[in-house]
Length: 360
View 1 (cartoon, rainbow, N blue to C red):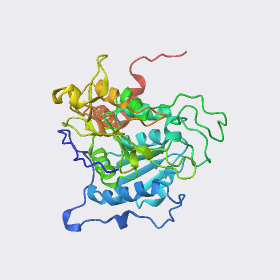
View 2 (view 1 turned 135 degrees about the horizontal axis):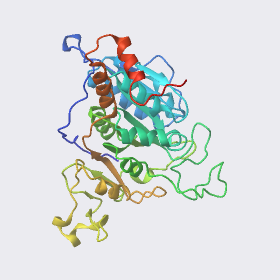
View 3 (view 1 turned 180 degrees about the vertical axis):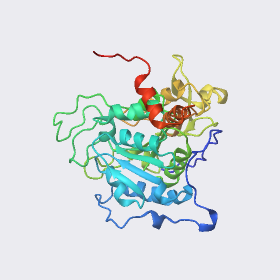
């Protein structure tokens, strides 16, 4: 599968506070972003492709390596910080978004990334993820979704389909799975996208757009686990996808397969139709910049989390909203502007002001 998309133009501000490399110092290469650590994933793992894509596009950001931080949780994907010649932290299970929020808030000069998996982000880390998204922290979150627990050897995950037979569910999972894109849109994330590990061009385009976005960016990456869930995404990876892939390109009608398209449904959502039967005027035009995420959410629901009948691939939403860390830093700066220049006096006024009581 190959999706030929152009990055959507968006009139939002670029990330500020980052220390760009002067042009005279010359361009960086992907080799400079490759650490001396041996890459240790199973043969055929989709993580290799994502790592290479990240190492290749990071030089294009024009940032110093010491101004880039990768924070991971626990899982196969969480080995990422070891393999990148940047700053990084291999943190604890599910808590990467919380740690990254602190880094992004304290250090405006850093480009902060979170690398996580469907188990790490959506089980124990679910609360941390949704609050980082709703707060709109300046983070780029890469969520590797292989629909299985790979590191712990094949238990079902929060995105595994109902009825999934694994070591922990020998009679089939009875859990209803998460749809990560729907979850992110429901949390009002300002940048939400989906891509595939095997499509290098599309993966790189989405990552570049996510990195340039000011605010919380979530990129779900369909990633194959060849050992414990091999072939989970074969329906959208072959040369003939049979209309399974629905490419999302901002400003363009949503067409796919052999004459298929998306249209508004009578119930207010979206549905698949044959264009020859409904006419070109009825075809839905994708608007990633629409403030109301209702349509993007409806499109995300076309992907049943258990079986890939249709899989929208691309940028679902890309809008502008004030960020948590920018506003927090502004409050701190405001509190420091005072007619009293003595720091101890300002501290005393802060402690002794407002609702205080004297205990005798």
